[in-house]
Length: 187
Image 1 (cartoon, rainbow, N blue to C red):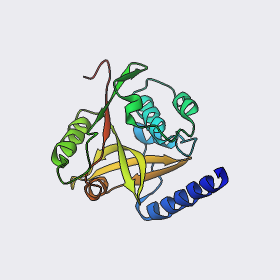
Image 2 (cartoon, one colour; image 1 turned 45 degrees about the vertical axis):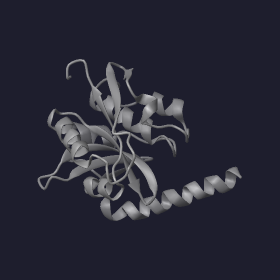
Image 3 (tube, rainbow, N blue to C red; image 1 turned 90 degrees about the horizontal axis):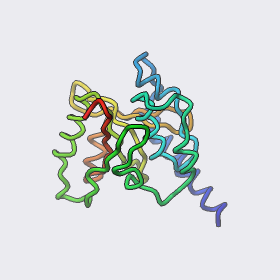
Image 4 (spheres, one colour; image 1 turned 180 degrees about the vertical axis):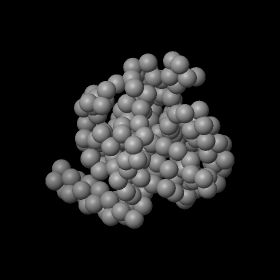
């Protein structure tokens, strides 16, 4: 049974990479967040959530580039969620789960997008779950483009993924949840 489950996971992962190929690229224009992302790895198949939290901790300079404690603890936990990090302080950074709501016609899409925009304007990043081909993957919203779209990064092993149509993906999913954070110097 474990072999079948592993094979299914690998097939889905391969499908996800193939689907994302047209929307992804290696990044590295020299700014600090690019450096953080390019020097980070998602080390387990199902460690996307702690991987994204580690990216934020590295971006905030709360931990060094070699920090993988959260993923090493999580490993391939399949029943985890943003709730595992909600209202949790890690290395001086406190994380908050937001928009854990039914994904339907009543989802407050405008409020979600405004929250992300406000976080980006204050110099922060936002952790977001994106539904990619019926599989939820974890990304970090990096910035907003001139046309108003959100650009998000993720890792698949050492491969850096970039999605330039985050809002479109969220709309197709009828919403999503995010994680924001507060630092001691930024509230």
